[in-house]
Length: 396
Image (cartoon, rainbow, N blue to C red; front, side, top):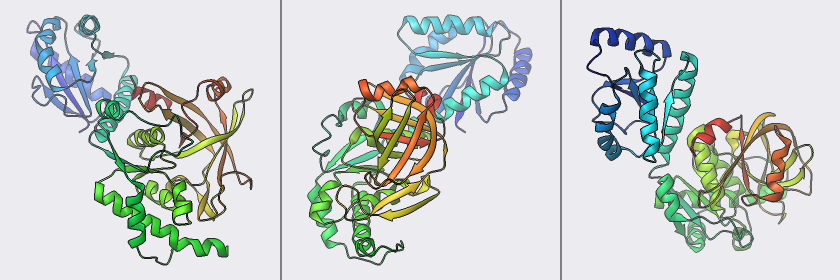
């Protein structure tokens, strides 16, 4: 189960009556959970731990328990109340005490639908944070020279997210590529130049699989433009494959973008489309995003083309389903994040832009000012669906 429920009960209250209220209340929520009652021995080991304040008069019990709970978990304290037997009043006193001691907490109270929805969201966030702990992400080569703001503070990322960032020399990948045989490709294209480059594009993919296994990576970002001169090909096809297989794969050595993709994947199951804005209408909130690769599991169909800037190798023109989207980015020291919802109103294929092109209209046009006044780098992550509430919860 993703949720464990522990209880606080005053000895002054009749246990039979309290148990009847407990059963009725928890059944009304229609959620799956482990009922741990007063046994806090495994507190902090679930994606979500709830302290069910069943009655009033439990404030002192919680205060005595607090050191033990703090030793097991540094997460916020979630106080579940039924609204009966003075449980809400006690929860308010407990939460006030937590705030006085600079500790985070929240009272989960309301009708059954609200409580169920809130618990479901907190479960997802808790599970995502557990997935991130211990993840290993590779930085293959340094960030591209033009990404002068797109680095990360490794110690902070390790402390706050539990993610380990590993530096892997570009030359190591190039050495593996040189030893990796060419093979026939499963992809098909009518364009002869792309046909010739497909075996090389898959050679890069096969070599990256060796690096991923060697370092036990759950994701990576690569200084991909170096491939253009070193092996006369691109990583676009490889990145599209890795992302669709569940391995985060980012472009240009952009570490904050990679972190954004990993956070997004932990919450939604999809890494997202790393792209940069090409045009913005600050009055209407309409934006054009573009890049030369997109995860295959995000698109309804795709075409193979050359890489835009170089005109060589294999690029991806993907067509994502029109509809709700979310734009997301975190900074390299995790001190800032940007989240905006909108609608993908069309895919397009202009010849003078990176191959995958999406026109997105922001739900709040005023959010466009962020990109022109205070952006977190140029690359941002596009996700299908509206996920602002879920993403925001990660940073509370």
